[in-house]
Amino acid sequence: MIRRFKPTYWLYNYFHKAALAHNIPLYKKYGIQKRYYESISAEDFKHLKGTANKYDKLDSFDTILKEENISKINSKYHNTLRNWSKNGYVILEQFFPESRIEAINTEVDFLIKKRKVKFQNKGKKIMFAFHHSSLIKAMGNDEHLQIVLKLLMGKKMELFQSINFMKGSEQPTHSDSIHMTTFPLGNLIATWVALEDVSLDNGPLHYYPSSHKLPYLMNEDFDNQGSRFFLGNKTYRTYEQRITEIIKEEELEQSVFLAKKGDVFIWHANLLHGGNEMNKPELTRKSVVFHYYSNDAICYHELTQRPSLRVRF
Ligand SMILES: O=C(O)CCC(=O)C(=O)O
Image 1: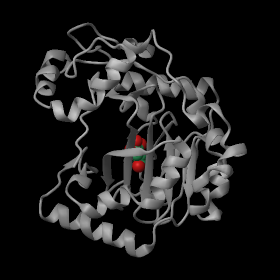
Image 2 (image 1 turned 90 degrees about the horizontal axis):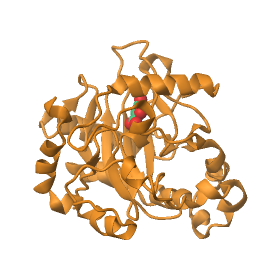
Image 3 (image 1 turned 135 degrees about the vertical axis):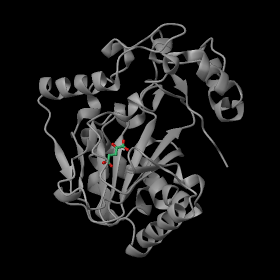
Image 4 (image 1 turned 30 degrees about the vertical axis):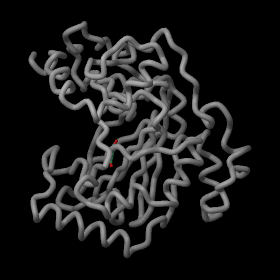
């Protein structure tokens, strides 16, 4: 019950104004009558129509090669970039060289050994390691990766979160937009980097091509809006079950990414994806995910109705 009591979050947020200040001018811009520390959810934007991003409106296939910065990106990636609007994902094979990947693996081992980072989710993942490592941060902010993100989103994207996985996440299918949400919708993007080869044995990433075009699923869509003082009472499992139903209803076909070390997978804010089970749980599956927000959107977490704490340094 206490976890559902919104004022507990308000109190915490109240003392973290600097990390929540990003939303203040945007609340003003959109006429949202909220204080920076209060709960926020899709309900608050129902009466508004947000502008869609460039390649949610236009087809990247026709126009992305005309973008000024495309010449800075190796032409072997042009085709996958062209298909962004259609697919909702991009695959950049061998984007990072072996030496860069090995440096990250050594860094992660060091951070674990020195107890600078903590595992979550039964020893599977490490959140926000980039706050403790300039190497990890530099990978998320890699110059060429940033150019690619700007090409896809039509604007600069700012690193919000990193998640290092030592094992396959085995995470059921979801859209990141239930966890990291924006108004207008679609102002989040994720990059996933293979820090070792991935096979069916160590739990590859799976995804549903073109699923980003489906409506975004918000609390209202699984009866989880809650009330002024309480979050909704539905479990996350209810959300996952609704996603499973949608996959069936829409007859979506799953693809699996058998990545090679150094490959990068980029997904759209609303692409359905997750992690397959590890056939051999004793193996590792080292990878890192970076999530980015744009600066012109309100950023929050629909599930917990919390504004996103954006730590900038
Ligand atoms: O790496 C994986 O297995 C899935 C990661 C994922 O779904 C996520 O970070 O949103």
